[in-house]
View 1 (cartoon, rainbow, N blue to C red):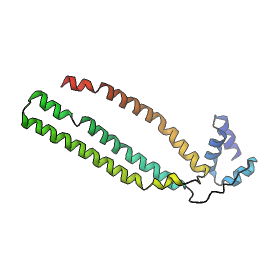
View 2: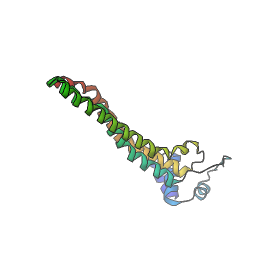
View 3: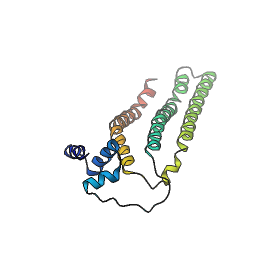
View 4: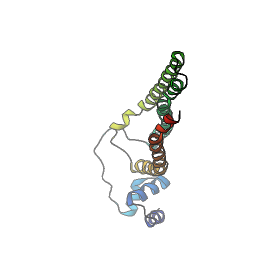
Length: 173
């Protein structure tokens, strides 16, 4: 455990990160802290302790929810396209009605995705009140956050660029 800890510290990990990784790989924090001469302060907080399983379930649910919300937003963004195309090319009342029906269908579908995502997410609202989070769980979540950072930044850049250039489609149609 000491070797692994020293190896992680040499790789540039913080003390907390190194301890969290070693604990998650080797086990009990009290034993590990004793070996390293680290004093662990006990919290007087009472209540539920966040388990690693619950944290993993929450992260898995977030991973499931994210595409649903993204698809719902995409439906909202593209919802007026058919209306604009039909009004621009044909301009008749019947065709504009088809465009409005498509617009409302896309928006209603998007709202359905948002509601479904909210229902999935609502079972984790109690987590905001949990004060007791073991160091190993904290470190696990930090590792997962770091893994997600690059895809998140790329997705954010792509989405912002697409929103900025989206009026080009209106001009083309």
